[in-house]
Amino acid sequence: MSQNDEETYVESQVIMSTVKVVTPFVLTYGLYITFHGADAPGGGFQGGAIIGTVVLMIAFAFGIEPTRGWLDNRVVVGLIAGGVAAFGLIGLVSMVRGGAFLEYRLLPIHHPVKYGIEGVEILGIAAIVSGAVIGLFFVMGAGFATGVLVDSETAVDGGEHE
Image 1 (cartoon, rainbow, N blue to C red):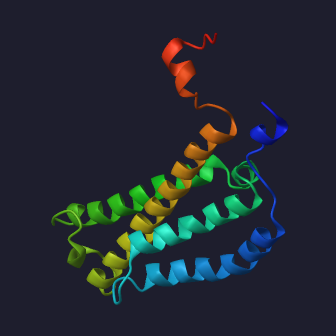
Image 2: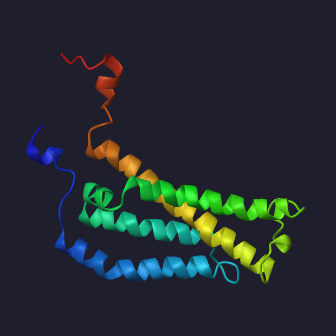
Image 3: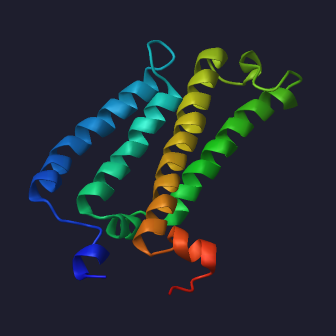
């Protein structure tokens, strides 16, 4: 195997420069879609996917391993776990107050239905989706970057080559 076969990352000044310029706009658009999802097309799922894609763009431009070093796995797991916790907490508060799971009108806040839905979308769903997109990308990227994946010959004959 030659050096070029082992090299999976090629630095491109055009891509790096473009990502540096485009990233703030894509992140802002993702936040806009997330925050305006209850009143307009979009929501937590779509916005979370766009926000997660920002990290993917950075990884494509600057490399998966440097991005993984910058964005610790605990942050990605925290996004997912925090989203699940926020979703569950909002739902459980209404149950504790005598209602059904996610019965927003029982939340002890001003405009409970409006802010309950927004809380689930922004704090719950958007965090879960963005964390899942980033996490799945890192898991798939780790297989390609560190040689975890094996070729079909090795998997079939146990690694013995003629």
